[in-house]
Image (cartoon, rainbow, N blue to C red):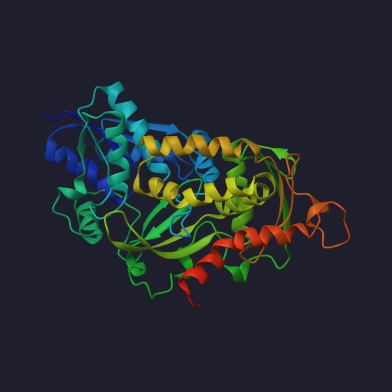
Length: 400
């Protein structure tokens, strides 16, 4: 019998309704947990709202520095981009929230944990894989897979009936998720993949028409694959990312509109704003380009889709992700240096890179006269690599 439940609580429509529903359905005490991941909300109001809605106790924890240092930065070191565009802003937040939820459940001697993710989405998997990885015998309650509500409209009806204040409305029924790395939008008009998102939907990034007409240059320094300063000023991980969010957002950088493949097999349209993360991804690869060996670079790049997939699917605490991370972190030890970036009208351009560990040799790379490289050596190299091509043509007579 379930007597006490720890709910991952955001204060949004789903989890606000979930408190009342869990109490009605399980006749259990509900403890709300809200993680401060930099979503920009007044969490005192979120706490008050949870208590008013029926939570017996509310935990609000500031996880911003831990989130950036131990989750976002390791993921960025892995070059993680899902399906070419998505920088995994929602995906990477779930394992940290779920981890803290389990810690609270242990502290409170709770019987179960719960989340507000739908039965169609990825988040249910991300939460629950983490729960089971950290506490295999935990009872998991997923209201969306149990209750009778079948739409956000029906949730709004329930919230109005029970006097539960929510931000979602029938006019703007978007499902949003915001943290220090990004904000996402799903649902509503966005369910039509042909429809352009409404201009008033965006939060972090300025419309291109309103961005500065003059380019801005910034320099980002990296140590061991992680950013440590902007224009020579050192900052903590969370403050550095927040600074880049403001700077990148001002120049319209980091907006994507994609139809992605969810783990459950459904195609879903998502719109994302990731200004600071976009800048860091491009800048770190610029420093990487002059500090890593060619084959090491190609090896890591070949593993990037798998690594991104593991994060997207929710396997942050799986042994294969941990093994991959160890290799990636070892590779990234050499990624130390500075990237100079030009920000203008939605574009983030690398215009300079330097490193004390650079493998770039201008004497070898030059098109001008030099005495380091004997161009005649290339002839033998080419002929050796052509041997199998010659043999294939001679023995099998294959035509192009």
